Length: 520
Picture 1 (tube, rainbow, N blue to C red):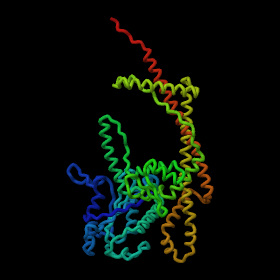
Picture 2: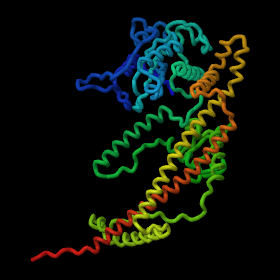
Picture 3: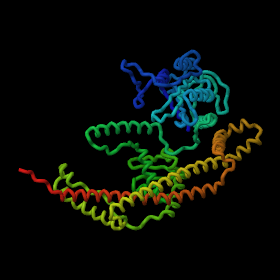
Picture 4: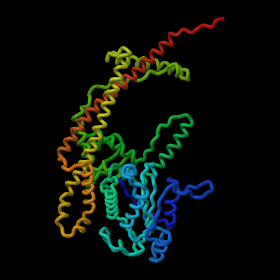
């Protein structure tokens, strides 16, 4: 899936943009990385081209344009716009995407969407997260150096006249997302619908806050490990990420919106309100609410109500047990080893009572399940391990089928929604104008058609049958998941009991051992 991101810069040093793309920089501080002689180190691999610069460099072309039109002289003026098109890491393996091909796509993308602007197009083989995603940087000077032919996505004279500045409006970003989707479709690359938010919304600011926090945590854990201490936390979470997880935890166990909002306040002190059909959340310590759009697509009103209704169906399938759960069987402690390590008499007294209680629970469990011989216990553990693995394999298979069905359903809904528009295209007089007016809709419609063709679907399934099949798979998955959890719990108990039996008889052997007397 290719994505596009937009950044702006007010830095009047235009050469800094090219320097960042060609030399290695510290991803946290932004400072160049120097070699042993104090010189900046070139990146290991990159491809770079310029557009609309003539025989000058990018920096010189921007400065000449600024002087010619008398603009970009203020500190608050946006000097450059930076667009990053990142491709799916799987494209390199599955679809033959290379740096050369990505560079060619980036150059054409820049020519089509930013004509008249001096630009740098640079391709890198990997990103900050080391996921292997090839990505293209497109840096354009904010000032247009020549008048260009008006394109369909340009709505004001400042979008094509020389001496005017580039505008990155919401309409422009929407056009660029559609252009990326069309580019990937034509190049047979993986792509998702960029017009709809996908999952959690992580801003640039939150992304780097998480990276810096994880770096500090890793350094702190390294010091603890050097001192022989066990770290208590290995993954850093931002405040927004903690808020998301708290809301998800409550959402997964409630069935009505009233219960959802009440439990959020009761367990985590999070207030939720609805305004103009949109939800927003306010964690403790804040006075300003955070809109669901800034947190996650899954936390918006429609998705929350859908999740609550699914919880109602799931509750009807799996009824909670009303019986009181017994205490979990825990391992016996090695009293002699701990006393030898420096534990006192008080610990020894507590440990003896603890072991007596756990040994009693172990015997009761083995008697209840009629597993009083070692062979019977071992055989039962093997049987449970087989049941556990088989049920888990079925759950994973059903889950994969449900994901596939959900993807098919999404494309089917889009296809049916925009099929009348595609039919209307055949009757209008000006095909090009009509298609440009509904360019985004046709992009997702054609993506759905491409999905059907790639999967060999000549006859489209019925939506109601898909929903019924999804519900059947969901019920079947819940049944196997219940078996998996039941086998997992019993297997864990019997393995603990097995360890307790071995530990008990080792203790008995030590207590009955007669020490040999020295011969004088």
